[in-house]
Amino acid sequence: MTRPLGNQVFRFAPSSNGHLHLGHAYSALLNFDMARAAGGRFLLRIEDIDVERCRPEFERAILEDLDWLGLTWEEPVRRQSEHFADYAAALARLERLGLTYPCFCTRGEILTAAAARPNWPRDPDGTPHYPGACKLIPPEERRRRLAAGQAATQRIDMQAALARFGARLSWREYGANSEGWDVAAEPGLWGDAVLSRKDIQTSYHISVVLDDALQGVTDVVRGEDLYAATSLHRLLQALLDLPPPSYHHHALLRDAAGQKLSKSLRAKSLRALRQEGLSPSAVRERLAPPPILTSAM
Ligand code: GLU
Image 1 (cartoon, rainbow, N blue to C red):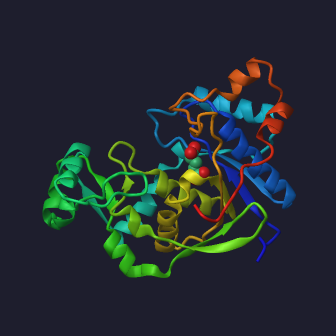
Image 2 (image 1 turned 180 degrees about the vertical axis):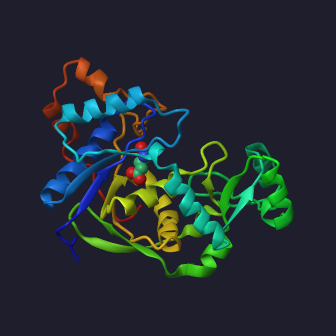
Image 3 (image 1 turned 90 degrees about the vertical axis):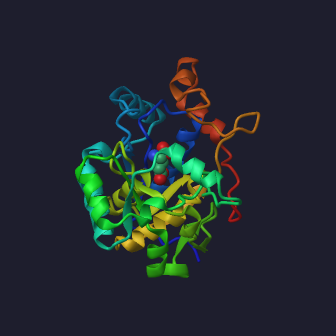
């Protein structure tokens, strides 16, 4: 089956915690070109919930770089830091459904508890599953600790969430040639994942799922590093009654050593390439032909 045409909404959703590199340019151009080819809309969203690391000057640079690349997008740009109330409402809804619980553990305590258990499972990002101590805290005690101002993350009670939707969830993934296939979601791989961090009271997972729905995004086109997270996103969509978009996870750009380009590994920024005299059309040429896309990820 091929991708349905018409009324499609695409988005590019960078975090404003650094400068864009060629990998971002690839993803942004792919979204933009796919939106144009479909006669659809292209949105830009700034993912800046991490208010410590995200900075207005990076946001300004992102807009400038994308403009330089020749992209245009609808205004206003949604900035996640202006919508914490939306994320809090979604989290409150999950709490009312009995699907989250506060966790007071530190990262160190979790690592120690997990290390003490042989063959303890890890999530697709390599983080040990939460061993669950705080799940057993009686409600009274939880309330007392929260009222006393003890900082807590909110975790999904994966067992309870799976009991609602179990093995029934899947998402539609499309390849480069528009062929689509269903992927069975495996949210259980994430264990009792954090849905609300201690410091920012939301998480990437909650914010991305909610914003894609609130902005009417029909087609999420993003790097394959987020493929595994889609299982968790699909579960959250089901729990929050949000319409699931279609997905297209593209291969990541790699450097000559085979490392994926990343801000933390100091991939050369688009603006540095621009200062070296690279033109937007040369960027496009450098990014073509597109990386090979496969269903086996
Ligand atoms: N903000 C994420 C990033 O910069 C992308 C999120 C997404 O496309 O779902 O990696």
